[in-house]
Length: 510
Figure 1: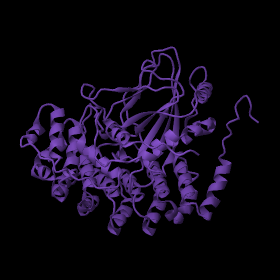
Figure 2: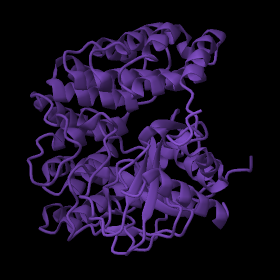
Figure 3: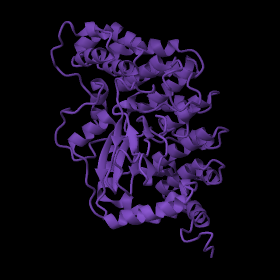
Figure 4: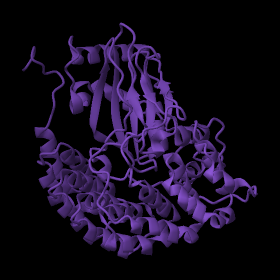
């Protein structure tokens, strides 16, 4: 296998800010033509057939795409070298004259009961075997929209067409707003989508890193500098620090400007100095309620530059959120319905960025707040590195919470912590939870813990027959990563009986 072609600093910064990259595989034209022919045969004359999650065994040649050095380099760069492929995959067909989709985010199969993570933990590859110019219905994306739940305002954040040559692919942040654009041509258009998951938090840059400075020279329409700088630091395994830049005295006045872009510019100016952030914490906290969601999000990240001084403001917001989880099972906020959970979500992101000083307050929220606050506290505690046994104990207890949304985020958080006997036992119980989203989150967390989850092998064996398709998918990943003799004794018989034959069809069944 060839050496992966890693992304550069400039490409990584563009991915962080814009949420996507347009890249090209090294595979020959004849390969893409053959993949197009196979996709066409799968879709059928009426374009009604789709292999769904069986796409990869139906077209095993696609493994060459994922072995391509550009694809492997891109995924290694944004997810680390030990990323895994999600069991969901899809063939997207855009036949001639097909209408455009509505803008949307994908679901994680948990909708909004999971907190959408701004950090680079999930990514998608969207590969096309044929050229896809704007008129042939490419994937449309809204640059920079991966950090917001609300449907982007087209007047402020315009859509971009992800046009590609044959064999090209979009690498996207999982949470970017996107859609299938209208196909105005008489030509078919196919796209395959595969998802990938980070297994470990970054300890160092996993791309071709040369310069630690943030030097983005082509920002998207909205300036989320505070968010971007903190993502850049996390991916490099470091802590974001406010710079020593002088902040103009009038900068804070822009926080109440009628133009949201000027409000964002004011936040960016203040975030250049920890002293300036501390001096304007009340005004920044007020921005958590801003009607333009990017302002709310960027303000939360800017507040984190103040460190412990911001804790009372952010924790007050979480503690005040005493109601039920307002997100329910919606995939995203469409811009029409109210979004009462926004200030608390922003506060959770800010608290996760502050890190260890926020832990005592978050533990209190996890014990005492309403369901939405408890869900957000579990998420933030999972994202904070270096926590002690008291956090693991609290998360284990939260896996039995009455609210499924809290259980989902607690089991997800345990997968980001060092393995303990209590944590493995809690996840082994959670893999039998009545809610399927709790079960597959528990299986994924066990996969992230890898060899340290050996004690969960019996629970994972039971999960292989779960009625939800993603529970066995994650359980297979967990057993493979545990890789002990007992795990292999469970895994191999399951894989043998699950074998899919790509040569079998109605015309040739034997």
